[in-house]
Image (cartoon, rainbow, N blue to C red; front, side, top):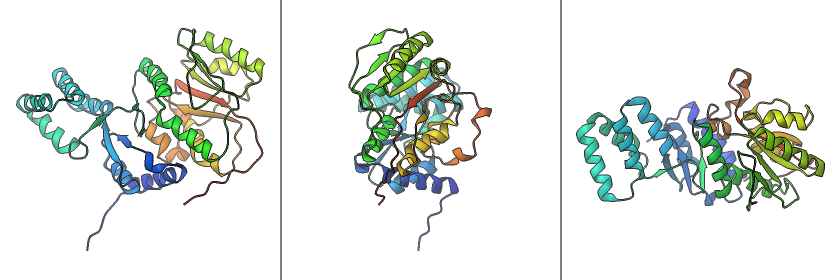
Length: 315
């Protein structure tokens, strides 16, 4: 007779991932899960998605190496080890690590490679990201644009949920992208149409005024203080301060059950607020974000108001 012991954190992840699996229309098409070294989260993913692969993120591994082993040469070796595609090169780097850093070699193979044999990056297309991206603000902005081109898991998730719930975000096939220097970028095929990305205050103010005069539903990503411009262009009651974790979880989980949403703060890519708390952890109910540094990357959405109840078949 065998018994499996799980802690409370693992049971929390299992419950949240089960709801996530029920909300996804094609849950079997989820290819990989990119996580950091969290045994409770890995166990929950293996329990809910039994046939899926779990990859370790390069950013998390390098961050753990830098935190536990303060050595620049070791840091570069680990980067080369994760990025190599040649078996001979991988073996040579492992031998070099074993000779120069025996303590790290034991830590590396007993802790990490025991759970995963492939590497990934959080912003790869087709992955469900349950970890932070980066602490660098410029990288966050650049990766945000790359995610939108490739179709990040967060946006794909919301797109599938809206398609499943038969609730269209906007009805206009028009995309406008504004770069960090305020120059318009060529529109691309984005799953969420009617999107305005404002990475500077002046570009945000000019673009928002144009869209406000056209009376089109819009979705604005405000970066580096441009949220204040959103508050200036629109009324204060539209850009009120809310709990980002609560609103994001409300968008993903509770909007499908008939709760009308008109004005919604949608996403947060600031790494000081963990992405795993946003997606799979239900502890956001007891979190007060006024004690935390406000996020730098926000998404402000003005949704069309529709009085109807959304019913989703739950299996």
